[in-house]
Length: 103
Image (cartoon, rainbow, N blue to C red; front, side, top):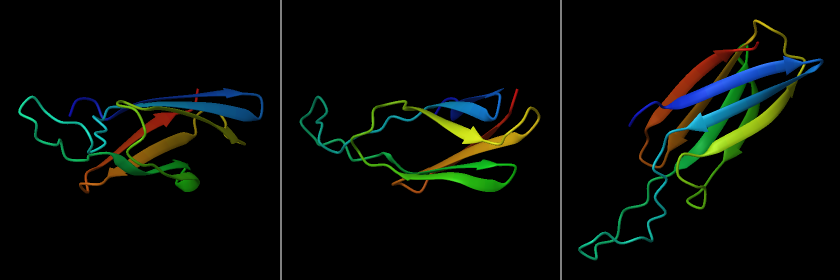
């Protein structure tokens, strides 16, 4: 897998906008390959985000989410220099975590 994630966090007043682009194939388990064999399901199940080590977001995803998903959310109270970390876990048990500094 290429880059696991690209995270941008920009503060504006009391709110910080966090944008995350995740690199993942996100197979539903319903497509077939050229030989007619079903491609096994492979998708992100859990996504979490934290601000300076404190969890601020938790989400459960399923096979309906697109390949290389994009997620955007707002955090209240973050300021420049704070650390935002995003983690995900897929149905095969693979995990990725990446971190960005609020600008």
